[in-house]
Image 1 (tube, rainbow, N blue to C red):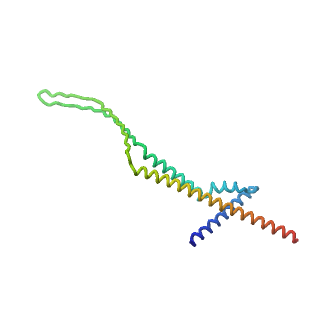
Image 2: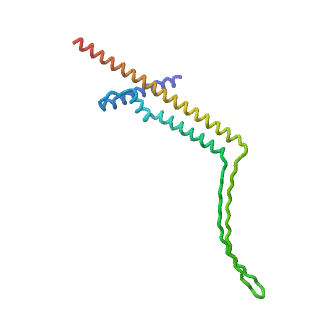
Image 3: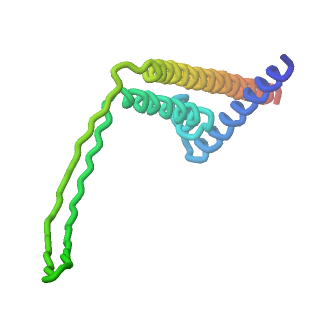
Length: 173
């Protein structure tokens, strides 16, 4: 439990640092950062979000691979053979005979199992994995968005506190 709390504190701290870096980057362009701009920057650079998206895409491709097992397998083979033979008949009068002929062939084979439960179970498992990975990606996205909004609100509160302190200081002078 303590490890999870420590990890949670570290992730919140990293979100704050991320927002501050983004705010610093945006302020260097001499305009205020909107929450939408920050989200767009984070969504294209945050490793956990990009990793979740890549995982979701990979599991979606595994569904396509599992679906391909339902299709028949087709094989085509072809050959061309040239034969030259020379026969010599021994005897009182030896004779030599020569044969030349070509042999061409091709074969088209299509195989498909009538019923194979392994294929069905593999496809169902791939679909379940795809669903799970998209849920995990969505969880990561929502968690990151929540951390961004929280850090954004804390930043705004901090700026308001600084402005209020400056106003009190000016009034005191």
